[in-house]
Length: 601
Image (cartoon, rainbow, N blue to C red; front, side, top):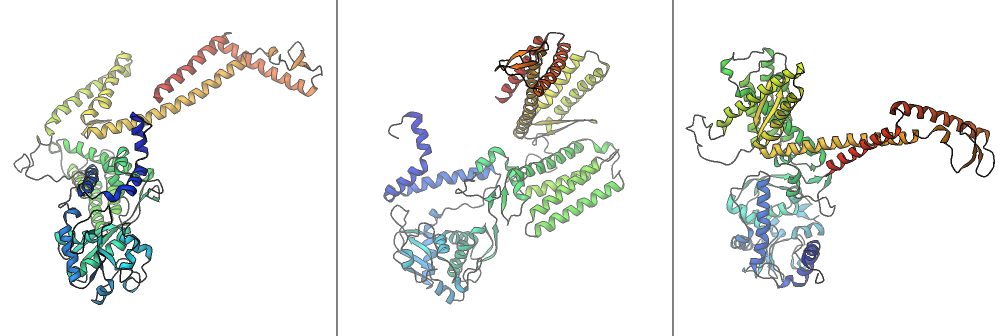
């Protein structure tokens, strides 16, 4: 490092960061006693975590707590258990006595049973329960090998707080019980966490809470979520398949990630892969397309037309499908929060609504379709797929639903005017194009219209879709539209590159064919391999003086006859100027290579 300077030193330090950190911690970590150092480190990652939650569209909690700000309550909680005779001090640490705990009628290891009183608990499980900071001496401090720390004497370099038991730190599980007990009381209805926390973390939480509060059941229900898998394998640094939230959001939106998880069982391993993400994107497109369709229909003045159900059986069938979907969603969520089935029910309803809209001479019921779209949106808000927001207050209107200006709807007449103007120009140009008049000008007008649709309006958050019945427009997030445009352009570029590469192979073969065909038939075998030839150019004597075999003479005659045909075809094709044809074909090859180089930049 000392030999490096400037940017090289920065690069080297960044590459060696983890190794240097471990070395410094091992050699000098015991000298760190200032709590502000620990706090500064924790605040950095706390802020990053909260930023990640915001980026994922996760709402802020009602209450945010820090264990370092709960130390007095933790000490009081531990002292209460000690006073009850259910915990004991040992060398500055405090352990929950499982023998005393169970003698009072309590059960241990409720979530992950391991024999009476957890007798079958392994040393490895206990090591995981105490954490890496437990130290090798903790076994000799315990009355029972399965006793776990409520308060741990701090080693040099670890944060320490004064307590009646001596300077130390909270045990591995205690803060959860203390904070939850303080905020939610002496009984919890629902407690959540990952499936790997059943034991030791959650079982130990239960034991210490029941010891403190004197109850037999601290939590009524636990929900344990499945692990995240990357391409089918559990995510871990050791497998080098670790991905951060920020990395995932570089390639996907928060909505796409949420849909991906909703399409999987919450209590089963969840798979993050190209396939599951592509499926989520496809489902997102289905929802968005349906919403755009209904939005366009609802924008029309349907009261100026005949109302009611005008499609007979089709209206009844869609209404029944709507009610059935609502029932399925409701039952699915009652059945262990089965979001996968609930999402499937809504997507099936959209499919039936799309079939309804595509019926010949359709006169769709706008109110029915709007009710379906509204219901689906409400459920997606519950799922966090649609931003429900935590805004409060009455908004800008007077409670009549007339908040058009506040919601940006005042711009709609201007967009309508622009769309109508574009439609008129486009229709006129298409009409003129049929007659063949002013073709170049017409194509230019059409190109301008497409540019407005594809390049200009998306930046303003306006999506246009050309349809036989006219142009449909919708307001959308400009960033999402720009990302879609970039993805579409990338795919089109890939297709174009693939086509050009095929063209290049074909034209290069053509160049080689022309070069081979330019050889006059009688000169085909006039090489150093032979010494004498007949009048037709067929070799008869090898360079060594030996005669060419009869079989080889026949082969050479056939090759010359084939060359005669190729040469004649080339002369006919090139107008007796094969060099000009070769140069033109080579120019095509060079032009294709240039286009490929431009597309690859």
